[in-house]
Image (cartoon, rainbow, N blue to C red; front, side, top):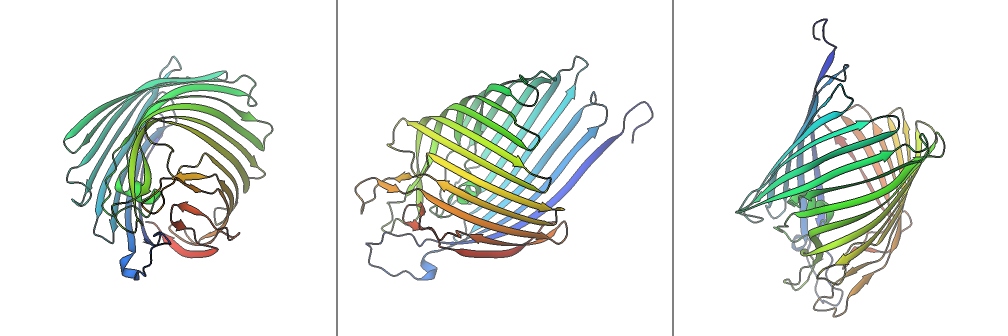
Length: 398
């Protein structure tokens, strides 16, 4: 607590530690291949150890400087002794000036060190994001830019991303049109690629993706205290987007490599949120994507339509029940040596149910019922999804 001439403030320092073990198997080889593989031939496991430190200060007086930040350490290790150490810093400082304008500065940094089986060099990303903005009862605006430098091995590349947002409270709380523009650098590190596709070729190195510019326009608001909405459309220009394809350098083709393309992406996204009570909420969302590719025929394994209906019940932050009904549209995969034509993966419907009991703040148990409808589908080419399955366990976080 400061002296009488200053307002009270709170310093935050919240550590967190998590661990996870994910077991996979490269079982997705072409059905025409006459072979029987042993478990050790297709085994893959991922060990993940994470630590997070949250820091910050908050003043009751909005004219004081406010800062907050997180420092993450992520360790990933697989069955083939590929590993990655990742240290990620994300910090923000802001201060409201007497004019009512708020000025801020975002600072980010990430360092990725991998085994030589993935990359002999290091991937370093450093970013600055200065901005100014203001919020009133009638409007909100924000202007700034992001300057990002990526040192990946022997190559250093600067990126500049302008940022702007204007939101107008046209009908208070009911209709708020907004539009803006931004951009970002997407880091495609070992952890993120393995979480997106567990069946990547061991030791896969993926280059980063630059979302050079995104322009968007939308409307959001509420029909009542319980029912709110958000509808927006966007247009993006993206360089070096990776798409997963079966690794044809192997006879079985049961792991995935990536191919890159520059593209334009038109996206329409809508959300309808119905919050019946503080404990019970329903979210309906829809995303439609249209890709304009530069080189490859289709955005491999990317659906053009995803619709989801999520229901969540939270009883005193102790018992949490969630149910999700999803539709994922058709996707395409390139033909392999055994499939000359382009492969079409049909759209599918999936229904999941989960229950979590939080015994304490650091210990909880969970049960998940997946694919309750028993739908037969493929998320990735040659990988039929599991039928109805049950997953249970516990989580422990310091």
